[in-house]
Structure formats: structure tokens, C-alpha cells
Length: 234
Image (cartoon, rainbow, N blue to C red; front, side, top):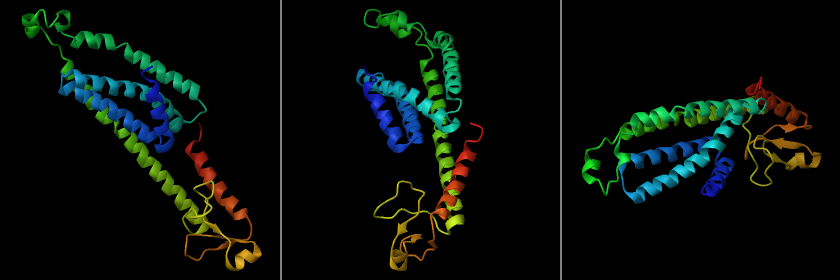
């Protein structure tokens, strides 16, 4: 029941900000959780850390699935998703020996009844474990960072291809926007309005007119080829 709200939140983030932002938020929540575990033993803060952990865990699975589809496509989604969960299950088998290594002996005593023993018992190596987890999580922030850089490079490549075809970068008219962000500004003005021919280009600049939609289709087909090349073999 506690994961009901986080499920909606991560869906909204992915829809409006993208997979990279959702991945970043997921890792940041885990980092904040580790910082709380390292910095305090206050019940209030530990409760906040628990809430952060609930959000992190609910974010983790949809973000993992979204990353698989965004980076590797849908063609082998079932196989890739199965492999990802298989590796996750195998990794979790290592939790038991890790816990046995760091657990100590203090959990065997009641701190209120055996205060002297509790002060001298083995508190384990939990702090060292949390530092290792924090370091790994910080390194994982490189994943959305490089994904975002790759996305910007891909968008720039498409703009360059569009400019090579039409002589100007794509823009959307301030009125009557098109359904695709890759379509250029289209206006009917001057002599073009009387002939029914479209004028393409940026606002306030002279632009070449098209006799038909053939040139538009040719340019869009070229961009479609670029998209297919990005997912070739998937």
C-alpha cells in the first residue's frame, strides 16, 4: 500500500521529464537514504529515510524496465527483461553472506535492559557498508549523465540533417503548432497564399517555397532512416 503514491509519481516524472530524469531522481533518493543512515540515529530522521527508501524501491523497477526499452528497444524486450531480473536475483543471493559479515552482535541484546553489554558489544561494520553503497550510487549518476549527453548529440545530428535538406533548422510556428517538433514553420503569406504554396523557414527570414509536399516527405524519410539506424538490429 505504501508504494501506491510513488508509482504515480515515477510515472508522471517519466512522462513529463523523461527516462534520464527519472533515473537521476531514483539514484538521488537512494543517496539521501544512505546519507541519513550514515549521519543520524534519530528516530524521526530514520523514519524519513524509510519513506525515501520506499519511494526509491518503487521507482527502481519501472525505471529499470524503461531503461531497457529506451536503450535496447522492444524487439527482445521479454528476453532482456528476464535476464535483468535473473541477474538481480543472483545478486540478491549475496545479501546473506554480506549481512553475516557486517552484522556484529549488538542485535542480540536489548539496549534498555542490557545497557552495559550494549555499550561493549560488536556494532558490526554497517557504517563501512553504507559508505560503499553511497560510493556506488554516486558513480551510478554517470549513467543518466551520459545518456543525456547522448540524447543531446542525437538531437543535434537530426537538426544538422534537417538543415542540410531544407537550409534551415526546424522551428514551430507560434500559432497553429504542428504535431511533430521536427516539422518546420509553415505559413501562407504574400504570393504563396494565392498559389497555395507553402513557405518554410524561421520567423522573419526569407525561406524557400515548396511546390508540393514531396520535399517534406523526402526530408522526413531521411530522418526516419536516421532513427532506424539508431535501433539497427533491435
